[in-house]
Amino acid sequence: MLGSDGTCLWRHAFDESADARHLLTGRLVELMLRSVQREPPAGGTIAVPAADVGVRALVDRARHLRHTNSPENIAHAVSLLDRATALAPDFVDAWLQLAIGRMWQLASWDNREVEPAAVRTPLGRALALDPSNGPAVALDAYLSLLADHDWSRALALSARARELAPHDTDVLQIDAMVLHSLARYDEAEEILAIAIALDPSSPRPRWWQAFAVLARDGDVERAMAIVDEAERVIGPSPVMADRRIACSSSPGAMPTRSSPRARSSRGSRIRSSRACGSRRRWPARGDSPRRARSSPRTCRIA
Image (spheres, rainbow, N blue to C red):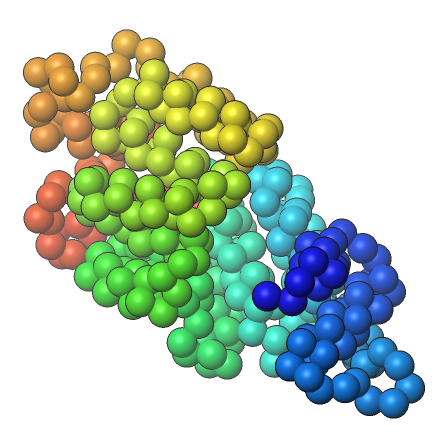
């Protein structure tokens, strides 16, 4: 929309230092004003508050660290986001990213320290600042599923989040995860396909697509094919490397969907439970929130 200069600046702004980002952001605003035939103030480039640029740099750095899937990097990201929220208490994205970082810690298999309240506090701040923030509403849905096992609320919130942000791949993958957890597998795969079409370069919807195949069908071969295709399209990715390890660790002798055992709903739920690393009951199609209360812990957001 801004032309080649503006696009180039926007693409590279997040790879620069805080000072460089400060200048680039001011230049970008100047280009935007010129595009609507408004001149910038006398004296040159528009000034952007250095504190704002610094906070955004912290949030961007934390987001990058979180996407590595490393527990140490996620912990570092959370510490950066604690600083960002202290510096800018009205910055919605800082609170949201802090909630996401703590959610990843909460959902990790070896979590012994992070409690749901550690996620609810920053998430509540984000929602208080912007109740119509689609990603925040989606995260609220995920927390309802993971910590509370409130399937009805999770389903309603995930649908609401999708209405608010229909083109956000993070929102779509959470909606798909909720549907998958309720054994609505076909609907979940349709939504993941939409997310992949919207952003072919994002590994996370493909990560969940591979997980869905493992959980529903126990089809290791197809899951590995999804990982191979993802790496062909987007190149090596820590997220997909994590999924490749999970696929390789799955029992290779699991039956495919076409086998008699795979057609058994009970057998399918057992394989789903194994894929999620849990021995507790996986809710069948049509389970009510009351019956699903003892369902297994949901897997981590990719």
